[in-house]
Length: 251
Length: 128
Image (cartoon, rainbow over all chains, first blue to last red; front, side, top):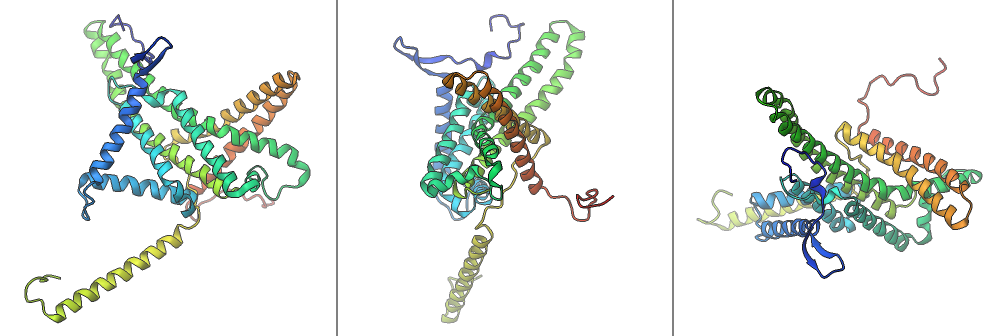
């Protein structure tokens, strides 16, 4: 932002290379940097906090254990005990999305999950797992997912395409929801914060008026923390529900 | 279990062992109960806030329409039947969107059942 009085709410999502390799445009970008930081923070925290394996946990270990319990209960309640095979997968997704969202709440940090390519890649990964495991476990019975039970044969030509489109729409809704929530939240936050600067340029009356957007900014910041945690939770819950479909393909 | 080091007679040791045996049985029982309770999927709806619910229903609906229309468009380009397959698939996508929304709402309803004794209006089999 060259002009400090010009508010540019989209600027925060710009991907810039941190280290470039060669001419081909291949570079280590700020997005990649924050993904590495996210994974690094998760690994470091979990390893350090659980390294002592104390029977009476300290604070750090207690948080790790609560995260484990939380995700384990979520997987168990939506996919059953058979779904616990996928616990490491769901836990990794949950932690990655949660920490990436929370990183995004720190000023001047890049929000990895505000780009649809990231969330769509995560959703495609979920669906690759669901489809491969579904066929591997159930064979062609997995296709029963598209044939609801108790439907007479003559409506199947209509129902089966609907079910297939419904299944194919899941990765899109899964990824768009996460990306849209984070993107919209960050833009709203930036726009309201920008109002304070713009109004402040008008003199003392402007400063008085700037109190309103300031209050809004504080409120939206709190809301964004809620959304960041909630969207990670929703992503993980839906993942375990789709995994449940792969384990028990009949509706 | 107040004095385990000093004057640990034989009876004291016996008592501790018995207690730990009982604790072990208790843990086993709780574990069995937990496994029985959580064997099958119970399906919880994820959303807590109204905004979350609205986002879920909205994206479920729109995603299906986009996928249907997109798939129809690609099939049209492949089979040179423009614009017929896209129109048909758009309608199918619309139906799939409604199906998605109904399923999402169903799981939300199951996650938050109405309190017992609340008036839910006339049932479908009521005459008047």
